[in-house]
Length: 188
Image (cartoon, rainbow, N blue to C red):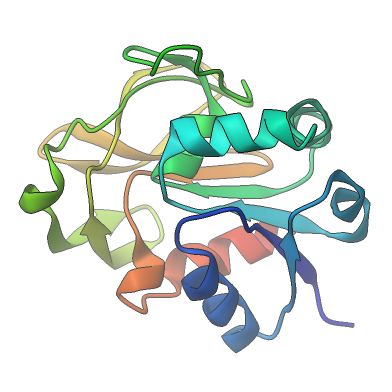
Protein backbone atom coordinates (compact mmCIF):
# COMPACT_ATOMS: atom_id res chain seq x y z
CA UNK A 1 0.00 0.00 0.00
CA UNK A 2 1.36 3.42 -0.96
CA UNK A 3 2.32 5.87 1.76
CA UNK A 4 -0.09 8.80 2.08
CA UNK A 5 1.91 11.98 2.56
CA UNK A 6 0.44 15.42 3.08
CA UNK A 7 1.84 18.68 1.80
CA UNK A 8 0.75 21.78 3.71
CA UNK A 9 -0.97 23.57 0.85
CA UNK A 10 -1.45 27.22 1.76
CA UNK A 11 1.46 28.69 -0.19
CA UNK A 12 5.01 28.01 -1.32
CA UNK A 13 6.42 25.02 -3.20
CA UNK A 14 3.34 22.83 -2.84
CA UNK A 15 3.15 21.50 -6.42
CA UNK A 16 6.87 20.73 -6.62
CA UNK A 17 6.80 18.67 -3.41
CA UNK A 18 3.59 16.90 -4.44
CA UNK A 19 5.04 16.02 -7.86
CA UNK A 20 8.25 14.67 -6.32
CA UNK A 21 6.35 12.57 -3.77
CA UNK A 22 4.05 11.15 -6.45
CA UNK A 23 7.14 10.31 -8.50
CA UNK A 24 8.41 8.33 -5.51
CA UNK A 25 5.17 6.32 -5.38
CA UNK A 26 3.24 8.18 -2.69
CA UNK A 27 -0.38 9.14 -2.53
CA UNK A 28 -0.42 12.89 -1.86
CA UNK A 29 -2.96 14.90 0.12
CA UNK A 30 -2.89 18.69 -0.18
CA UNK A 31 -3.53 19.60 3.46
CA UNK A 32 -5.76 22.64 4.01
CA UNK A 33 -7.89 21.47 6.96
CA UNK A 34 -7.02 20.09 10.40
CA UNK A 35 -9.17 17.00 9.81
CA UNK A 36 -6.83 15.94 7.00
CA UNK A 37 -4.00 15.51 9.52
CA UNK A 38 -5.64 12.25 10.65
CA UNK A 39 -5.55 10.86 7.10
CA UNK A 40 -1.80 11.06 6.42
CA UNK A 41 1.33 9.08 7.33
CA UNK A 42 3.67 12.09 7.15
CA UNK A 43 3.69 15.74 6.08
CA UNK A 44 5.88 18.19 4.18
CA UNK A 45 6.01 21.82 5.27
CA UNK A 46 7.16 23.56 2.08
CA UNK A 47 9.14 26.70 1.54
CA UNK A 48 7.29 30.00 1.22
CA UNK A 49 6.91 32.82 3.71
CA UNK A 50 7.08 31.39 7.24
CA UNK A 51 5.27 34.26 8.97
CA UNK A 52 2.42 34.08 6.44
CA UNK A 53 2.16 30.31 6.87
CA UNK A 54 2.05 30.79 10.65
CA UNK A 55 -0.78 33.33 10.37
CA UNK A 56 -2.75 31.08 8.00
CA UNK A 57 -2.36 28.07 10.30
CA UNK A 58 -3.74 30.11 13.19
CA UNK A 59 -6.52 31.68 11.10
CA UNK A 60 -7.69 28.24 9.96
CA UNK A 61 -7.39 26.89 13.52
CA UNK A 62 -4.77 24.31 12.48
CA UNK A 63 -1.64 25.45 14.30
CA UNK A 64 -2.22 23.65 17.61
CA UNK A 65 -3.43 20.42 15.96
CA UNK A 66 -0.44 20.34 13.60
CA UNK A 67 2.02 21.04 16.44
CA UNK A 68 0.44 18.30 18.55
CA UNK A 69 0.57 15.73 15.71
CA UNK A 70 4.23 16.55 15.01
CA UNK A 71 5.19 16.43 18.69
CA UNK A 72 3.44 13.03 18.91
CA UNK A 73 5.68 11.76 16.11
CA UNK A 74 3.98 12.40 12.76
CA UNK A 75 6.98 12.32 10.39
CA UNK A 76 7.75 15.72 8.86
CA UNK A 77 10.04 17.26 6.27
CA UNK A 78 10.40 21.04 6.54
CA UNK A 79 12.13 22.91 3.72
CA UNK A 80 13.22 26.54 4.12
CA UNK A 81 10.12 28.17 5.66
CA UNK A 82 9.13 24.70 6.86
CA UNK A 83 12.43 24.47 8.75
CA UNK A 84 11.70 27.85 10.34
CA UNK A 85 8.25 26.63 11.41
CA UNK A 86 9.74 23.52 13.06
CA UNK A 87 12.26 25.47 15.18
CA UNK A 88 12.08 25.91 18.93
CA UNK A 89 13.16 29.56 18.68
CA UNK A 90 13.59 32.22 15.98
CA UNK A 91 16.30 34.84 16.39
CA UNK A 92 14.45 37.32 14.20
CA UNK A 93 10.71 36.54 14.10
CA UNK A 94 8.25 38.71 12.25
CA UNK A 95 5.91 40.56 14.65
CA UNK A 96 3.73 37.96 16.39
CA UNK A 97 5.33 35.03 14.57
CA UNK A 98 5.25 31.69 16.38
CA UNK A 99 6.86 28.33 15.64
CA UNK A 100 5.59 24.78 16.04
CA UNK A 101 8.45 24.00 18.46
CA UNK A 102 9.16 20.52 17.09
CA UNK A 103 12.96 20.57 16.69
CA UNK A 104 15.34 21.71 19.45
CA UNK A 105 17.01 24.28 17.21
CA UNK A 106 17.24 28.04 16.89
CA UNK A 107 16.96 29.54 13.41
CA UNK A 108 17.76 32.87 11.78
CA UNK A 109 15.52 33.72 8.82
CA UNK A 110 16.96 34.97 5.50
CA UNK A 111 20.51 34.23 6.69
CA UNK A 112 21.81 33.70 3.15
CA UNK A 113 20.71 37.11 1.91
CA UNK A 114 17.90 38.49 -0.23
CA UNK A 115 16.23 36.73 -3.15
CA UNK A 116 18.72 38.19 -5.66
CA UNK A 117 21.46 36.19 -3.85
CA UNK A 118 19.65 32.88 -4.54
CA UNK A 119 21.89 30.08 -5.78
CA UNK A 120 21.93 26.40 -6.71
CA UNK A 121 24.79 24.39 -5.24
CA UNK A 122 25.80 20.79 -4.88
CA UNK A 123 26.22 20.20 -1.16
CA UNK A 124 27.40 17.27 0.93
CA UNK A 125 24.83 15.77 3.31
CA UNK A 126 24.97 12.66 5.47
CA UNK A 127 22.82 11.04 2.73
CA UNK A 128 25.20 11.95 -0.12
CA UNK A 129 25.62 14.92 -2.43
CA UNK A 130 22.41 16.90 -3.03
CA UNK A 131 21.69 19.58 -5.61
CA UNK A 132 20.10 22.33 -3.53
CA UNK A 133 18.48 25.66 -4.33
CA UNK A 134 18.97 28.35 -1.67
CA UNK A 135 16.33 31.11 -1.81
CA UNK A 136 16.33 33.59 1.09
CA UNK A 137 17.45 30.56 3.09
CA UNK A 138 17.46 30.33 6.88
CA UNK A 139 20.39 29.09 8.97
CA UNK A 140 20.31 26.91 12.07
CA UNK A 141 22.27 28.87 14.70
CA UNK A 142 21.82 26.49 17.66
CA UNK A 143 21.47 22.74 17.68
CA UNK A 144 20.12 20.88 20.73
CA UNK A 145 21.54 17.61 22.01
CA UNK A 146 18.79 15.49 20.40
CA UNK A 147 19.44 16.92 16.92
CA UNK A 148 21.80 15.54 14.27
CA UNK A 149 23.39 17.94 11.79
CA UNK A 150 23.01 16.46 8.29
CA UNK A 151 24.33 19.33 6.14
CA UNK A 152 26.56 22.39 6.33
CA UNK A 153 27.55 25.05 3.83
CA UNK A 154 30.72 27.01 4.64
CA UNK A 155 30.44 25.83 8.25
CA UNK A 156 26.83 26.99 8.57
CA UNK A 157 24.18 24.40 9.51
CA UNK A 158 21.60 24.02 6.72
CA UNK A 159 20.17 20.58 7.51
CA UNK A 160 19.15 18.75 10.68
CA UNK A 161 17.34 15.58 11.66
CA UNK A 162 15.59 14.00 14.61
CA UNK A 163 13.91 10.58 14.84
CA UNK A 164 10.71 11.74 13.08
CA UNK A 165 11.78 15.02 11.46
CA UNK A 166 14.06 16.41 8.78
CA UNK A 167 14.59 20.15 8.42
CA UNK A 168 16.58 21.77 5.62
CA UNK A 169 17.31 25.35 4.56
CA UNK A 170 17.24 24.57 0.87
CA UNK A 171 14.89 23.37 -1.89
CA UNK A 172 15.75 20.02 -3.48
CA UNK A 173 12.24 19.85 -4.93
CA UNK A 174 13.17 22.73 -7.26
CA UNK A 175 16.26 20.95 -8.60
CA UNK A 176 14.60 17.56 -8.97
CA UNK A 177 16.97 15.90 -6.47
CA UNK A 178 14.95 13.29 -4.56
CA UNK A 179 17.64 12.30 -2.04
CA UNK A 180 16.12 14.18 0.93
CA UNK A 181 12.56 13.15 0.08
CA UNK A 182 13.67 9.50 -0.07
CA UNK A 183 15.19 9.86 3.42
CA UNK A 184 11.98 11.46 4.64
CA UNK A 185 9.94 8.57 3.27
CA UNK A 186 12.16 6.19 5.25
CA UNK A 187 10.77 7.92 8.39
CA UNK A 188 7.16 7.56 7.23
